[in-house]
Length: 426
Ligand code: HDL
Ligand code: ZN
Image 1 (tube, rainbow, N blue to C red):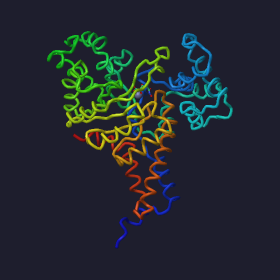
Image 2 (cartoon, rainbow, N blue to C red):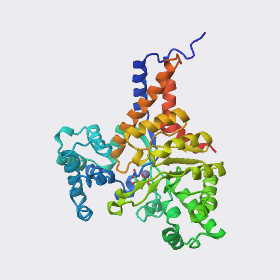
Image 3 (tube, helix red, strand yellow):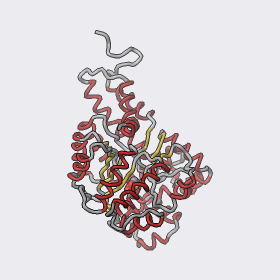
Image 4 (cartoon, helix red, strand yellow):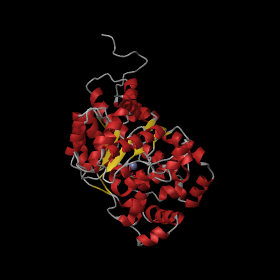
């Protein structure tokens, strides 16, 4: 009986061989990071990078208030440097930086070759002061082995829109996603006036065919301008579909038809409770378990549409996997936000592979600060590799003839191939 594979592609036989091969393949795999809040240089101040931005990441702002005796008002009155120094002193010096967001800063400093042991914030600041943003982008993409990131682009953001108007959004490693939270979640109090101001003849309750047509024209314009990989919206846990209000009329008469017409998938990020504690500003959002019957209905009634979905509640993750088994027009992605912690990434990745095999996008970074690509992907690669090793181990233990090229194929699919194929598929 001929061996199933040519000799140049060795069959993995031992656990040590497997562990080494999977770790090497996962680390060597370039990644398409399908959801971030990063921006390319032409977006100016919107592109965040450097130690003070890392330390004032909203995750760390939420954590520092649990340790410091300071009013919200006094914290927000501080400069960014003062906030960074307070967070460094409180969460890194007076306490060990063991939370995922703290650990990420330490991992990043180490990966950049800085002396973590010095704990000298001045030295870290000097490193960043010494480099240009263009050089640092190359350093970060190289160190994190990320090939492309998808931004989060808000056409209603006055800081962003002019850059799109200029036609130069710079570095091709930064791709676009058309974010529609304002249009969908704030149509009546924000989007309506904004659209009217731009000359779109829409009514205040989006209740006319004319308005549907105008919103489609708005979406078409931004799709032509941004060439987005997908359109996206974050939704509260009580998201309902079908829906007899503005959201339902936007979905059915505008977004879903345009998504099909331009073959631009619709990404739903469900489960966020905005401003649970408004005094924390961006750090004040919370999470809630969603009723996924609405997602099932949306998928069932729109089988010619493609949906990317990530959920914010741990309690929803298993149900999402089961729904993934029912609908091929659903691509499950990432361990979003409060899910992006080692214990939950491991749990979610394991249950996804057990229920869905290799037909998911296991992770995105959600990076807000460029440097974060380094730690978010170093941490996640390790966890995902460990789950893959466990699953492959059970195969080779029953003599499945697994080869390195098959592992490379699988890992390439997980970290970019599945996304590209899902986008292309019609
Ligand atoms: O809505 C989103 O895309 C979330 O990711 C929020 O931006 C959140 O603030 C975040 O950065 N999570 O990681
Ligand atoms: Zn995000």
